[in-house]
Amino acid sequence: MKLNLIVGLLLLGLVACNGSSDDNDSSPNKTTKKDAASEATEAFERQNLAGEIDGQAWTFISGRVSTADEEGKSYLTLWDANIENPCEPAEIGMRTVVAKIELAPGRIELGEESSVMLTSFEGEIPSTKKVKNGVLKISRVADGQVYGALRAKYDETNYLIGTFQASVCE
Image (spheres, rainbow, N blue to C red):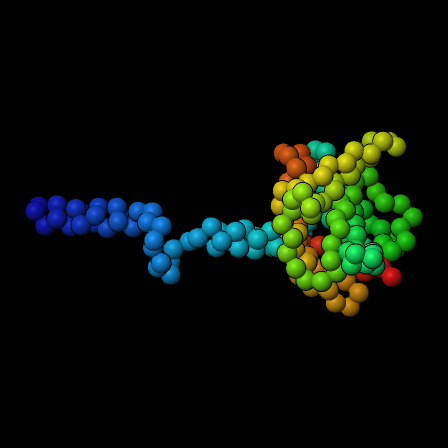
């Protein structure tokens, strides 16, 4: 009986010590905010880009990237429609995603300077939301294609998360 009590107290002590939140802990098993952010980034790179724009389901189907302007920036445009020729679209669909990017691998934290625009059309009237919360990552630019991932949230009915592949247009 005494042995069970001692073992129980030792286990309780071990559990209590492992649950402490000592900020000076430099053990290799400690999860930092940076590690948690990296894990979240990896998670958004594991699925096809999808979400909602103006409360309507949106799933990435096709996209394009324009050639760079005088500032070295290109426009990334993503659609939830099957656009036969993304470089010269006959129509653009009812909901689009647009971002200004550098045509090179990199990670962009969305904010005041770098944002993503979500646009939807109700008839001829556009509704545009400037999303400043999230991450846009360009993983690779190769063979006339841009590969990337996006995690962006404006509100509960305007958000996107996942990967995309877009054609580079000359």
